[in-house]
Image 1 (cartoon, protein in one colour):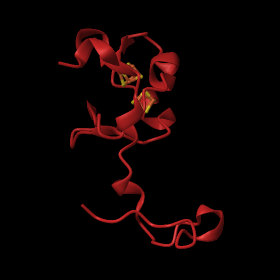
Image 2: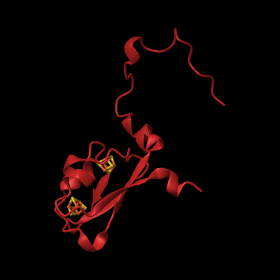
Image 3: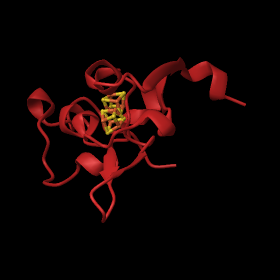
Image 4: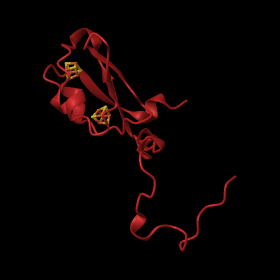
Length: 98
Ligand code: SF4
Ligand code: SF4
């Protein structure tokens, strides 16, 4: 196991000292709600993707909505809120823990 940095070794102000490192931080780790999409109702408007702060909703080659990357989905519920046909439902993450 790698040694944690001491307080003196951490950059002042918590600066990000490595470019392009955001992919390393899996924001899905602290999700307490999970978005579930009712596929039959989706009209592929992509509003969910436009407003997702993590940009974790993929777009397929044909321009239609793809899957939600749960490694990065933090469960904020913005996608459910902006979906014009209300086909995204937020479910408690605890239901999916085995
Ligand atoms: S819940 Fe938030 S982070 Fe997850 S897909 Fe929806 S908008 Fe993105
Ligand atoms: S906002 Fe709703 S209808 Fe539009 S692509 Fe996303 S899930 Fe489908």
